[in-house]
Length: 197
Image 1 (cartoon, one colour):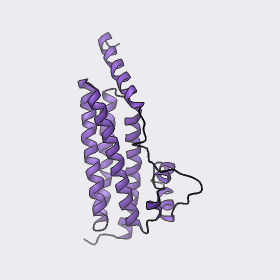
Image 2 (tube, helix red, strand yellow; image 1 turned 45 degrees about the vertical axis):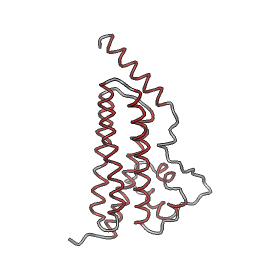
Image 3 (cartoon, one colour; image 1 turned 30 degrees about the vertical axis):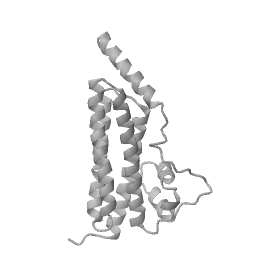
Image 4 (cartoon, one colour; image 1 turned 90 degrees about the vertical axis):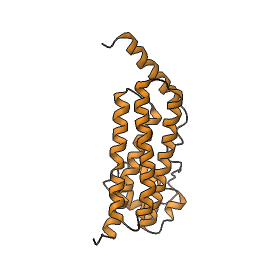
């Protein structure tokens, strides 16, 4: 059994993070409202029905905006997915930064700072991929694929530091969904436009 002061520290960290995590999660949950009366495009349906997509419902909800539904081809859809992924990563990064400002325990700060760095990388990667889609689908596919381990490392650090916050866990989970959508759309583009190197 851990010493009493360690239990107190863990309890204080949990309570602080829990109180911060009860704030609105709208920044990291897709803002699109899904209604059965809003038809999705065939591109969106095909993507979200793919077996590689981790959460079909999330995919349909995240990609139900008029701009996405109006996408005319896989490249446009891919660009929009990367923009949504980057926006989601920025919102989640803001949550991490907000919690760091209010938390003063070194054990948790190390994990949270690791996640901040991961999300900075994720944002840059999604932004870079959206510019690579047309010219080099193979590279963009790889660049999306390497985002996943960054998020996994962030989660591992949070678990090791015993940081439990609904908003952080949700942000990480949603990021995994965006990565699966990004990976699938870049895989599709790679098949449509094979590199001839």
